[in-house]
Length: 113
Length: 113
Image (cartoon, rainbow over all chains, first blue to last red; front, side, top):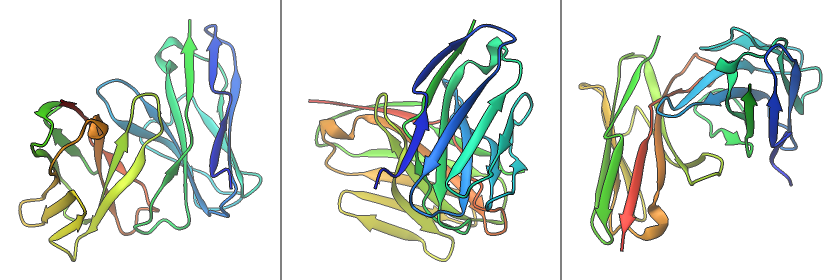
C-alpha cells in the first residue's frame, strides 16, 4: 500500500496563477483533510471531507476550494494564488472521524512569488 | 473554538535525559489528545494518543499524561536518543467534530550526544 500520496512535491507559482494539489489514499478511508504548515504555527486545517461528495470548511478556508468526487481523492485548488499562500500543504486521511489516527501524506511545498 | 497552547517551543536535552512537553487546551468538550512527531522534511506521524477516560498511557520510552480538570496534557520521553530529535505536535479533538484536530504550535526537540 502506498498510503497517502500527494502531487506535486514542489511548485512555484506567480501571484494570480491557479493550481490544484492532488491527494490520494488507498486505505479506503472515509475522512480526508487538508492542512497548511507555517513556521511557528503548527498545522492548520483548511478544508475537510467526511465522505465522497462532501466537503466542509476548516479553520483557514479563504482562498482555497476543494472537491471529493472519488472516495480515494481529495483535491485542493487555489484559484488566484497569493504570496500569503506560500506554505507546506499536507493531506491526511482517517478511517473515521472519531478519535482515529490521521495518516499524513509527504507534503507539497508551494512558493508563490 | 478549541485553542491549544504548547510549551516550550524549543527543547535541548542531553542524550539519556528526559524531555517533557506540555500542552493546554481551552474546550472542556475535547476528549482525544494525540501527539505527532515530525522529522525534518518528513510528514507528521502519530506516536501516542490518549482519550479523556484515561489519565496516563505509556509506550516504551514515551508516556502521555492528561489532567482533565486543569485541561492540560504532557508528553514525556525518557532516556532520550539522537533519533528523538524532531518537532513534536500536540493536538486536541472533540467527539462530535468529525475528527478535526486543533494542533499546538510545535516543540523542536534537539538531543545532543
